[in-house]
Image 1 (spheres, rainbow, N blue to C red):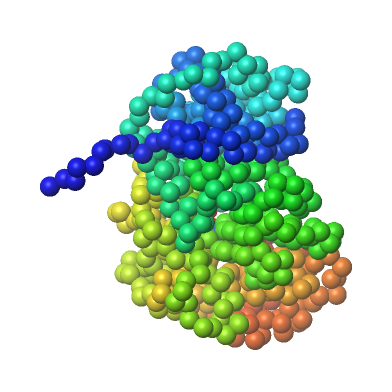
Image 2: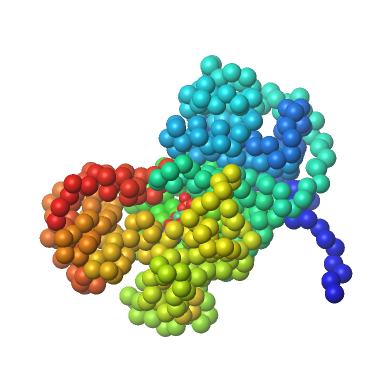
Length: 540
Ligand code: AMP
């Protein structure tokens, strides 16, 4: 027997309808190239997104067509997000940090019809235009006064387009499973793969992300997502903030700039922020150097890669609560959050430090398991390392226009490509990417744990551990370190001595190499494939 409840589709337009009715006057503040503090309200944001939807209605697009964005996080990008998907098109957010051949591949693979471009990325768009002949038009997201000369064909300026458009728009009635947005993962090998989110997955992910055990997002918050809108929908904040009625602060191109971020936090009264460890390093370095503080900031979420303990401890000193979360493009991105629980056992300081670094518990809606190489499920005992697999309504079931992928080898599950342990109480910890694991004498060494221990050394700026062939053990860890500024005297012995009581004896790297900088991927992670190439000839 079915229940007798109304069958209303879960659609992104309902976020718009809710926000403009319930908290239309809450502010959205953006840093843009043509205005360092653009300020308006959700009412105005959604009014303009309807104008944009009317502009797009004249472009001859079919439902499901892809319209791309190549932009920083700001109000125009927000308008494009909503205008594109509420019209029934798919908002393909492009990561401008990818290499030109990857960008060419994804625009052509997605068959993007139109592209919205930030002024900063115009040279990139000009290089791409001849390689992507199917693109019918380019819109530069700026005002007429700031519209630069450009060689782009079929080019329009955003503000004049909107100026003449009506703000009355009838949202088409869509199926909740229809595609809403598209984001390509920046794999380090092979072509990028497209993850196609639906209206339904976006709404469910948004709702769960707001839960107290997850991001605890409400209308009392001022949110600064320092995660770009071109990467996994800025962790969903462009959807969850208007739904919650939280004030949204979008940092434009200033995501890695500690001084600008401090200024934004203090001038806007930011209470909650989210970003990857690299962003926190930049913010904390600025606060240390300037002596400034961020009194309004109550909480930060860190994800994207494993955070060093030093970052969390520095936030403790600043009076900012920090919480680790884990996810991936294929998961919209949210998978786990490390929220405190009432039943957390009393722990020694050392154990508590380890606990808080873990990725967290699966959020409601996501199921996790770890499996051995034979595919058998491993116990949640905090000891067994396994391939981490996930399923749930906002987990990708297959890649866009890709028949087969090893990530979906086990039906009904996504192989995340991460290696993890899970404690009996559900706390998951990432120990490695499966491609980066180090197998010494048949046993796995967690490069993340070793890296974390090294990073707590005050003279270390960045560190990576990779496996190199070893005649006896198969592979042994090689540690690569970037010294902190002014720490030229730091040598291998000091680093290894420092590690001795922090990691298992057989995890201790066999050698330490010092470099000026580490290579990074387009999403800011250490590029271990590149490092292994650099050290291909290395011998212990
Ligand atoms: P992306 O799809 O680019 O967002 O990258 C997802 C990957 O980032 C995951 O599969 C993990 O390898 C890594 N990652 C995300 N969050 C964490 C975390 N809290 N700790 C360790 N690795 C993480």
